[in-house]
Image 1 (cartoon, rainbow, N blue to C red):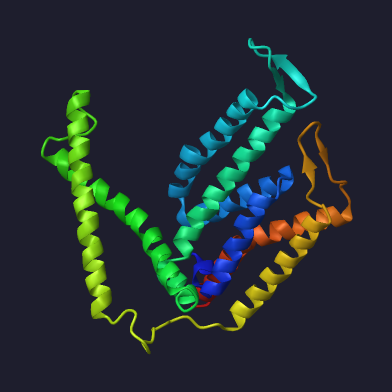
Image 2 (image 1 turned 60 degrees about the vertical axis):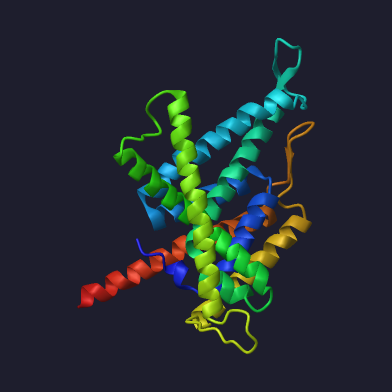
Length: 296
């Protein structure tokens, strides 16, 4: 499906991901974490389809379970003791729930960053920060671009090596190690050559010269203004909720959360509205296009 939110102004895209990722890391309330994870999954699946489902099952679910399993092995705080390990340390309900909370937070942030990488392309990043922090924005955009490019090139090299009988998954350990070193050597050479070519290309285009202008296709229209106002309201409202401890939740020494009332529910509702915003925008645009197509 086409991602309508990706066509919004880079400032709207960046502010949105800054808010959802920031609140995903800052809020430890189970409801807020569940909302963030669920909305991140729905948005990613809506935009990328089966690829996102495989990513969630392959990386995010094991991360959650691993955190829930490892935390009780090292943290033994909490008053609700379930059993004792052979070492004499207790296994507590609080440590299990805290581990699950940490895993949920990590999984949500991972999925949000997956969408961030897809939406916030290098040209958007340079457009926003090229004049403010030109060197840093260039380094960050090149780094974000280099990681998937390096992985794709490594898959290509590994496939080529497999085609001439050098499959890294077959043979003895010594043979596989030699093939892996060969692939690594090829990739290092490719990365160095790519860096030289990029530097020469930037120099030939006048990068760094005084008075050099930059072409941009981005325009800030009324749609972006409305989205920015909504993001500003949600961000300020949720900050007030954090200050008012509406998202308060304690795991140690005993589980305790903020009182559930109309005010705290309103903060959760605004948080849900913030996280689900791209899904709603995509669904609205799809419905508009279907209505237009039906009239043709």
